[in-house]
Image 1 (tube, helix red, strand yellow):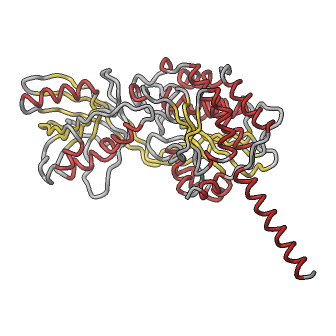
Image 2: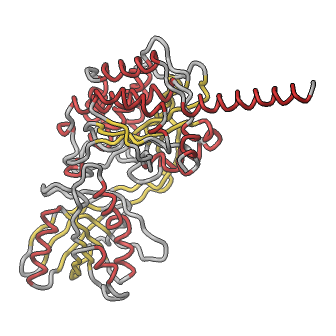
Image 3: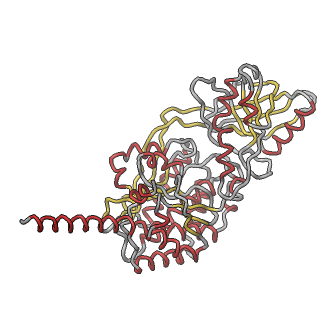
Length: 471
């Protein structure tokens, strides 16, 4: 082969490679694919499958705290539902974790103004002794005030933080306040406190405390911790302004080491690239106070409803859609368990997302990296606009707690933003029940999810390359 001919061959090869890369990263979805995605979205608006799913889950199973018999029944229920809906490769992937059980809980003001307080233990909290703890409180109106307290200044006291959480559509108020619940007990213990109470991380006014997990930090004593109902936190502020306040606290929590749990999996098999996976899901477990309707019965229903619609198409997409119903999100174990079990296929998961923000409408979609400005992003924006949603030009920072470890390993994440203005009114409370779900709002969320999932699975969009392009 002559030198000039060799140069031409190399040039053609480079051009072909560049063209393939362009097709993979920024290809305009064909009109038939876009039309199918649009039709799926419109069909979802009148499909009762998602609401039927969450209604059955919350009615027939109820609360599903990981590690309990109720959660075991939920796993069997979910497998049966996925199989009945035509999903393939339905199975449960086991893992073990230290299961936390609530037990009895109570708190009372003692002394000259005796009265009961509405409290609930934080997930993972240690128990008091059998007689409980009685001590004077040290009340802090902000978390920063607690952090400013000197070491030893809370010796023998119950630390109480009453900082309020800000209501926000995107849930950012919860993220900002989350350290108060996650790390407050350890910070109080470092300063000598014998127990820790906080104003519930919530935005409602009902006398229902909001539970949620804490994280004990290394090097700090583990002290009992609970959340106060919001009106009760207000009451403590008023009483503390009048003089010293003493509280008797009783928590009888227990831990079951090496308890079993499962991530439930079902797939819609791809036709041309079945080894490439679009991973979606929600978490099957819930707290034990309500029936886990919005957290996260609605999320698993959204993932189920969207994938079910795609499974019913005459021609399935080229990539596999994998639905994962995670088994211990509330206690922070299922996402890491899934990532460990699937370490060998991280490179084949093209994108991942978790529905875990209630049952209201999706108002925007955040894509990985530069994808919002790609042909894929522009097509998606055109399809979801009639559904009342837009594509946000800002890249997704995360796609849900259970896919965080996948994201750390390099899997691109997408965030389908739901309206959460009132989500934290009932979040993690006994009031998280089915009546809080508007079926039409749930259907709209399924519609947007359906359109995105189908386009991601039916095209060869390369979210990893688009993410790198943004850097």
